[in-house]
Length: 290
Ligand SMILES: [Zn+2]
Image 1 (cartoon, rainbow, N blue to C red):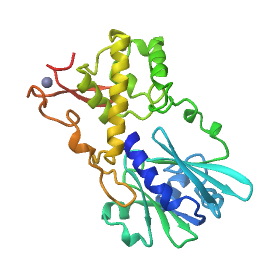
Image 2 (cartoon, helix red, strand yellow):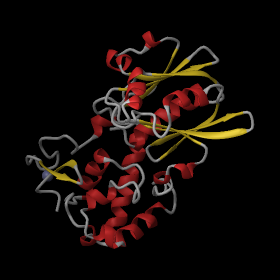
Image 3 (cartoon, rainbow, N blue to C red):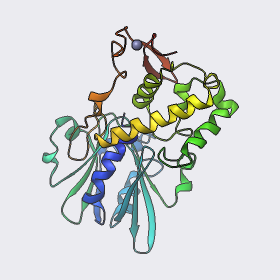
């Protein structure tokens, strides 16, 4: 699943390629329409896909930004400004190509769900193999409250205090630290990969209760998370399963991971263990992490 660094990588490539361009028309996949017809919402949320195609026509893409794991396309038509928000889910990927044949890997080509035809003749393509991604057309951000409840960006000055304050709430105190740091309302953009790595680096057992960790250690943990996220951004993210940047390229952070998906601890050689915490598999070293 793409985490903050992977989404940041996508945004950094979309910005110079797509900003300032105008959407001539949009074509959504048959799967999206069929799902809507069957009363389900596949990828396009809270809007009839026919209407989505219609409202996106003629939209100019002003700027593209990242907020946590979401991509915000700030769009406008005439005087009116809107927001088109995308979450990549498990396997969402964007491509900018002249024709679909340019998308190198067949699995992405086979699962194209939205084509934004730009007036430049280019195609801005959204592909999603497992279809857990989301697209929302919004007039204002309040239309999707979860976007307002996200923790500050981890690189902002107040993010650490925000994390410490959240940890004090009864709701989080007795939860495992892994679950807490992966909660987007506590820390923005730290998913399973970087939570696993950070806890290993700190020698903290993923199931340890949050209130059993001192304030000092929590601050250190937060700094480790921030450093790992930054390092991963620099390396173009981790390519685990189906993440690709918009040129279909893979990042290289996966080669730096020490615990995520490992059979043996790189420090002591002990066989790693795994537990399901908050619905996600958590790998850890039973000797090094307490
Ligand atoms: Zn170990």
